[in-house]
Image (tube, rainbow, N blue to C red):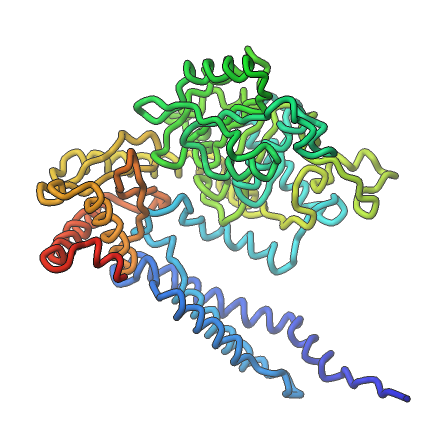
Length: 522
């Protein structure tokens, strides 16, 4: 039976049109216009922070758009029609997205990223810059290594002695750093699995406020989440060195293998910085690996005013340092540093002849894939490299200083307000606080907590502000992180007034069904 080859000329014509510079030019101009108009709208009072829509409705709208896609039956490519459709899709993304650049966004530790950083990042996406081996991403590799060298010096590492890499997020960076620590302490686990340590239980000693990714890492690494030992905190929620010392001695007496000590700079709940120098003293005394999660607080090392918070960071064996937090880069760009350059290859042991060229062993130093989980890794350092090259490192000091100062202003506003209570004195740009009135305090703790949860939900769905919640000592509270340097005292005063108004409206619901019943109904 003879088959006739399909005529691919129409398909080839459509593909050539999609790759055409003319389409890219027209769509780029359209996008530039939309982004500029969007940026101008963000400071306006009428612009919501969160474009709230119920998840089911958003899903339905996104699916409907896919179902309406053309079948490409037309023989001629219509440039104007395609650009117009592109405009509508891009506008929909902006209209339905979360406006983190709005100064009333003071929620998660995700910044109002610097707009020009996004343009550098767009080059990566449009040209698909990737890296695993040097020859796949020569300039991307050079950019990443240059940033590692520059950032490592800011941390305090000695040039020529340290190494690092960039990966997709602090969770992956924590996992990679702890994997290196595990392989150095228990190398047999890589090949034989967790059963290789039956006679000695591996443990990780961590700050009680450490990020949940550390516990996840323990499970992934075969250490076991139950073998995470939490070190008690002091009244400022900082790790107690004396308590750490007791736990180290206890583990040694019980013949447990300590994989690493994990400290925070700063911890997520209230932004507390652990005493790194005292912790490093203990680690050096007992020959233990010190891993510091400085995903949020690391960039304080740029600030002359606040760099004391990260004193001792350079003594850590591994450090996680996110550029997509306090360096205000688009997500994701997380740095992992090793104090000892030789440890950069400790996390992974693999052979991949099709990637790593044995005829050029000197290139291995530049093959990033040898030290990351990712094989095809997006070149996620262009944005930081571009901004640093344009404005210099003093910009990052400015961003830290401004956001920390604004947070301090808010803390003082809370102290002066009789109906609000800060739950701690902030060290950085994180504040946890509660709304307090005699009426609210007369309720049970369960109802007070439900009131805070319900009030926050109303606040974010209204689009007026975006804040998050927290639970400190079993008390629900509000938590803000000033992640936009354009947020001002005026915005923060407006937040307090809006909370008061929303609380007054919510209080009325207690006159009918109990709040517990209402929450169950919703």
